[in-house]
Length: 214
Image 1 (spheres, rainbow, N blue to C red):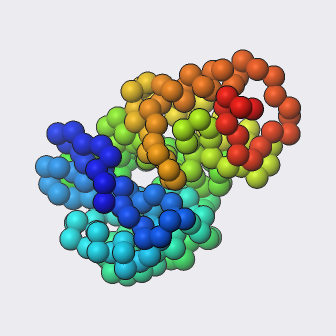
Image 2: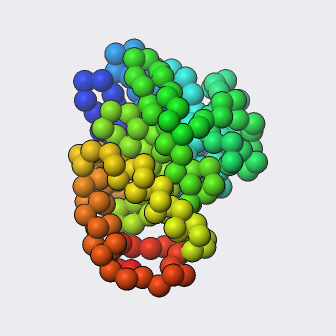
């Protein structure tokens, strides 16, 4: 476990999923009460469980339903006995039913914290981002230097729309914790996207797009 952000209200830790090819799971904790939420459940269930079993987890929140984010979900739900929350449009691929179906602008409360939900389709139909304070858990919607992978031009247009309408309107100092690799700060992504938007692009653009190389 590595602390990636902390202030007087919240602590965010990147967990070790076990192995090298998995997504990033995060534990977000209210420092005043100790209550927490787990964001995404990749990797080895036993490795994951040892890190969260005593962390007063209230909810498991899912950013989206891809296999590299959900492999430990069933085991963790069974062990922790807490509700699983995600978007209904991704529900068909989760290994357990969603106990809570989150919509855009919903608010998840735990301890004395409030986490706002953003529905950001494009990577999947039901992709979600979660904002607590100035920290954004972005799943596979946003990475350093570009958006998440898309499988068609329509999906790429959709993820760009999600970013421009919901994420790039957040404050510049927002710290972004992505579903893979390192995080970023939002002003950098806004600046690179402005440069991307100032150039012409072919209409069939999709896939692994980098703002400054596309």
